[in-house]
Length: 295
Ligand SMILES: Nc1ncnc2c1ncn2[C@@H]1O[C@H](COP(=O)(O)OP(=O)(O)OP(=O)(O)O)[C@@H](O)[C@H]1O
Ligand SMILES: [Mg+2]
Image 1 (cartoon, rainbow, N blue to C red):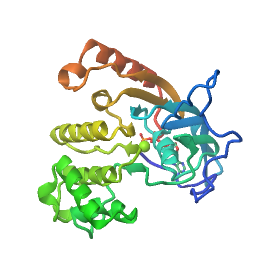
Image 2: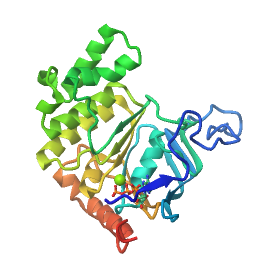
Image 3: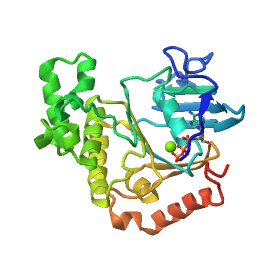
């Protein structure tokens, strides 16, 4: 996707300058009758918009007035035509970018910048090339001050779960693309994130590698109970992984549906009549919509 040279209307997020602070304390509300407080959703967006100002003076409304609630533990897949705001939304959730208006909250607290409780995996992996695989996985644990003995155990656990135990001493350049993605996944899960944000993490991998990574990701998601927002252009990938499917069109949520398929999901489940109906709804939500190159 061609991305125009631009300056963001708000600039990069700095500590404490990210979300527009609400005047109230978030979505926690006491039910009538004084019962227990309801836990806040993992993610809550209120009227979130993001406008970029290009050097030409033109503005691009990448995200427009999005309201969204994602309960804890949900696996949400985000689809949509190219250039319609998916990555912009994810970048705001990661705290890398602040909204032009609106509020994003994680577990009831406004997102004011990146945080260790939010793990991010991009299309391009971001391994430290000068560190061995095990040191890459250990990096976040060290940064969080976890004692050495505990770090070793955790690193071992995630290397085993991602099938990388025999590559612990390897350098990133000695690994295939699929193995590097597995290291990236082991890195984020080792940090035990509450929210995992993934932007087309498996793009360019062959079907066998993807199937392998789907299994790894599903196992880790089940084991950790974390909340996942996963961007993809592949409807079958979304149907295999997600609990819920969102389609973004022109910066807004055009479709928001649960994925009512039994797990584990293989070819039979994702080609069932229910899956086909959902696929048709996704295609319909995107049909006739131009991509960023044509806008
Ligand atoms: N930093 C930026 N400066 C200016 N415009 C931007 C910037 N980032 C994104 N945009 C514009 O915002 C719109 C949404 O972009 P975004 O990257 O969110 O789309 P996307 O849905 O993730 O697309 P793709 O599927 O191709 O990755 C596009 O028109 C894009 O050109
Ligand atoms: Mg994108």
